Amino acid sequence: MAKEVDILSYLPPVFHEMKELVEVAAIENPILSSLWEEIEKSLNDQFVSTASERGIARYEKMLKLNVPAIDSLETRRFRVLTRYQEQAPYSYKVLKQILDSLLGVGQYKLERDVAAKTLKVKIELTVKGMFDSVVVMLERITPQNMVLTVELRYNQYALLSKFTHAQLSQFTHEQLRNEVLT
Image (cartoon, rainbow, N blue to C red; front, side, top):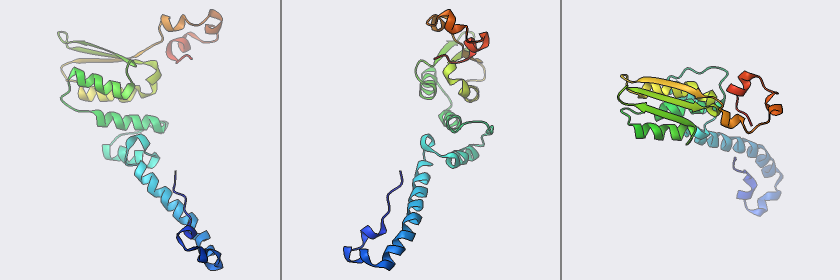
């Protein structure tokens, strides 16, 4: 929220009635308000979580990220955050912390088989739009000698059993499997 600007409030009360100063203040107040807004935007652009379109575009340019035109600002922020979360070498504990911070606790299932050198990550359907960014991040930070499998965790019977047949009949099979049901 931009700072409320009132030039006359800085002057002694005697000057508040001078026509020339009132006119000058009326002209300068909107200019200074817009200046405060720009300052606030530039401060917000310092942090990925509050960055505007302009700020996120700057981060994407610095990180050399290719951005699809249809991505929302939130998805673009998420992509930048995933790139900043990358760190090598990683441990299983660090990987869990990264996934918890990006996706949320309980929004994924992580299976690791050290002997078979496999890592399987199932991401909840609620973060479907961020799937590609998670895949890219995991491919960059996981060891190259491990087989990485990243999948969406589709709706399960336990979730669908809460609904009646009449409610479920309004959806197609694909919608029941692939869409977030509320």
